[in-house]
Length: 557
Image 1 (cartoon, rainbow, N blue to C red):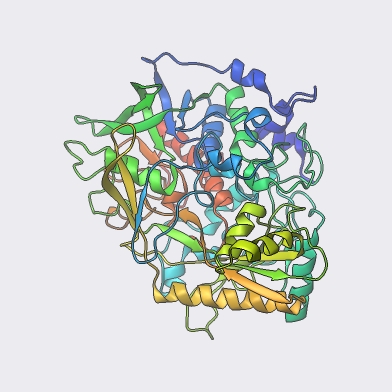
Image 2 (image 1 turned 60 degrees about the horizontal axis):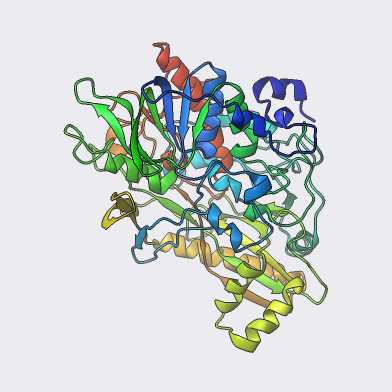
């Protein structure tokens, strides 16, 4: 078990929850600092998700004056989140966007978020680390790109965030072998079946890692295994920035302004430095002045905002001198395989990623494709399960039969490392939103390596479920997480930000979110985004003090 005193000294969120039975400290919001509109703050952060929320907490603790603007609401779990799959769609970014390419990516429930906490409000809680190999895939495998930093640069921040969330799981043998602060959760029906099948086919599976403490953590309640992780954890056992880092940021003087759609980053033409942002709120347009600006809007909205911020000296957008902005946007291939079993499974009765494996994560030199995939249990609730069934062409009475049979099904999902390609990108469309701003157009096409990975992962999952005793197996193709679009690089010719998150060509402007990732691995990105943000806070503090560190500095926040 981690030393709670050390964690509390770094992040007190779990102890800020009152002991009177309430799951949210409403007084923190009531007492939140409010800056005057003409105040110049140390930093304005656009987006309160994994990157922006973590960065705000770290900088507030370092004594910075912080304002965070988020386009969505400041959620109240007690009143806003319900045990209703359909009613939870308000958690997704549903503003207009365009998609294209030969393999267009639906945008919504599995790759976007709206409101304070971002998409981590409705993520599954699964928080694996990236592997050391993810940071040099081009050098090692001849595909993808090399990061300008190394795994060792993030290791201490992985450890910090894992302790603060905290993470529960078995000892992890893949990548950089490590253990977790909390012991693994008990396994439900979906996990038990997967373990049975994995043993039969010789695949090593582990329980976790999930950002859900096994038991109480500070004053945060324990998980009750109700199965609504993807709809917002109403009991607040599942970690998200809304629960784990935003409260601590408020306690240290940060201001959160919800329902604030940022329209452009402001840059002084004389100094070529970011000076603040312009944003829309309640039908009015405002400006917030700041000594530094951080964009943390994720892989669609971050490139869109930097493109919208074109100016006299940056006519193609900020950080886009070499036409890199919006490019190399990646999604993970996420095929799901469901198997029917004679016994009742009730796959919803546990956090969705109960057990998982990274046995296929690395490049296998005997295969015709590069890189790999991970496998984890997933547990679609009834509405999402109906999408699986209708994808097979079933409707009417047959669909009703499958829905009545819901408790007999177990489901697995893969995350396949689809490769970064320059033409998979975000641009501005002719269509405009309610503020009159051009919406994002996201074009995406798979390459042959991508298709081979998805096919191979699907076959392995089918074999596993059949080995576990499934009498019927059905498959559905889908996509998962977004990363890239403003990638980190050693040179401006190859990316949008440098190794210290500074936008090339513009002073005092940073990007701190998943869009900076040059590759995506086969891991869910939330933990890596938070680790990057924790590292960036220390770097920004060094920059503000006039000290510039090397691109691979071991910064500790």
